[in-house]
Length: 446
Image (cartoon, rainbow, N blue to C red; front, side, top):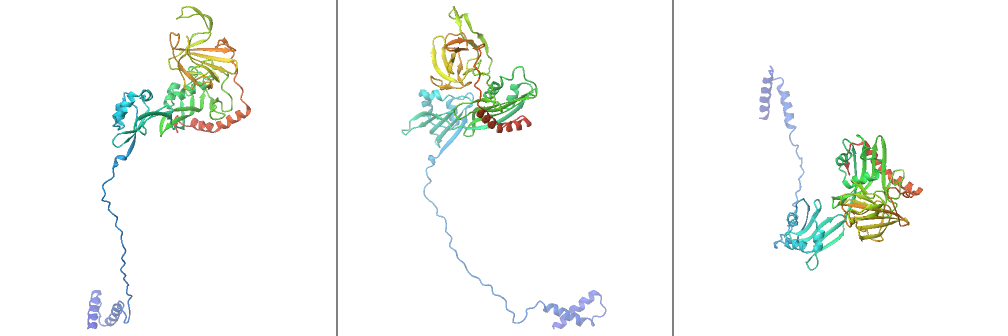
């Protein structure tokens, strides 16, 4: 039966190929096909592998479900921060901070110390620590280098405290080119006003900033930015500066021999920029003019009498900062008849200077306090017998008055060789930074 089937398949195959003789090749093809078919068979007595199967059971631990009521979430607390904006009131600012505590406003309005210290100055940052109901835990206001805090004591009464703020100093670099004016270039480089004033002050002995500048003059500087909790608070010291005018580069460096002992500005090669141990004009750079000079006979506009005027009057706006003319010690700080608020400094044994009609005294200015040349000792005012805001400045040698505008001032003390070498070494990293700024486009970066 099987051979008959194979023969029929072979004949059909040959017929399709057009073969004439089927019978002669049919036996061969039958054998061929038979071999092909048997190649796919299984030989007798052949065994196949049996796959073993094993049932594995593993225990699964299910999480337990806590059916207890949710915990009280009112113990959560939050810190919020807002910058004081123009026109803000304490109520509007606290509302933005999420403080829902009427006792706070009542306390700040009632307590004299809190009211005096919590002045809402535009730009300052106010931080509030509250619970999720808005009840106040603490209120913080940064005032310069002091942190003013209102918080609850152990009896839950509100109290105000003041302590030193945790401030950080970051170095900032800036550069610029004069296109229209020097002040416009400083603004374009985002240099803070206090740093700009110091820049002008330290270079003013060598550069005329009002008539000696040219288009294309360049400047570069490195200064401190004081930061609290990542937010800029104020500008710090000017650390290094360079000014290139008419192809000549001049540089300055702030240098302290030891921390806390004060410092001064020197050139990168260790030269003291102070030609004299005393400043002739003890005021920061501003619009200053002399209204009354040194004379033995002057008609006093208020007393209507002829009197000696043994000093120089510098007319300046109220609030202009007054600088110590030289290193010294405060001999007197208080009120004297006619002089109003006055400070007297002792310098180098036989020299002394007097500053009168001041509006107020700088923090720490009291008898026995040490001051450095250029340190702020107060501000211009019009206390005492005066017709307008000005600084009355006197210069004395062994108790005898001299005209500060014409007397031969003592020379600055020469620097020791080891100090010069220390200044040169301290200037090296700043020199590299300023060289990079010189080759860059005007910019300001940290």
